[in-house]
Image (tube, rainbow, N blue to C red; front, side, top):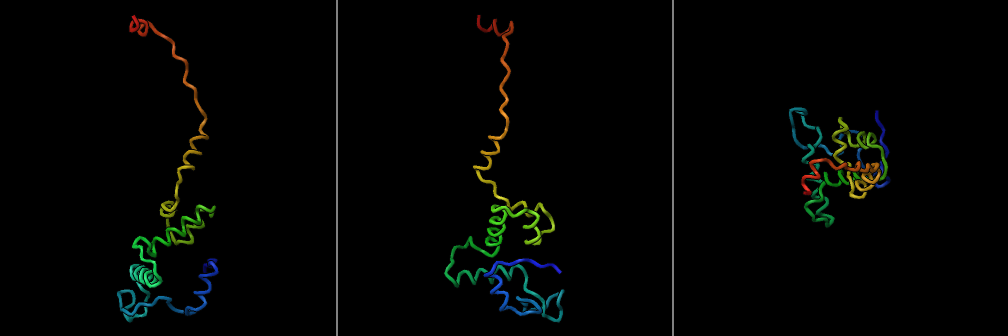
Length: 135
C-alpha cells in the first residue's frame, strides 16, 4: 500500500470521509460495476469540483479542478520538489506527462543563456576578393 503525505487542510477533510469504499461513489451502474457501487468518473469529479467552487463564490470559468491540480503540481515543482516525486503524487505513469507541469520563467532562460561561455569570433583576414570589392 502506498502512503502519501497530505497537507493538513486535506487531512481535516479526509478525517470526515468514509474509512472504506469510495469517497465519491457513483449512483449509476457501469460495465465495470454492473451492480452499481463504483466510483464517479473523472468528468463527474471535475463537474462536482466546479460546482463547489461556484458555491463558494469562485466564478472564474478558468478555475477548475484540473487547473487547481495543475497549479498544485507547478507550485511543488517551482519550490524544488523533485519531478519524480510530483509524478508519483499525481499518479502519472510517464515522466513526460509530469514534465508538462514544469514552468520555465523568462529569468530562468536569461540565466541559462548567461551561463553559456562567450565565443569570440575569429578576426577575419582580408582576401584578394575583399580588396577587389573596395576598388
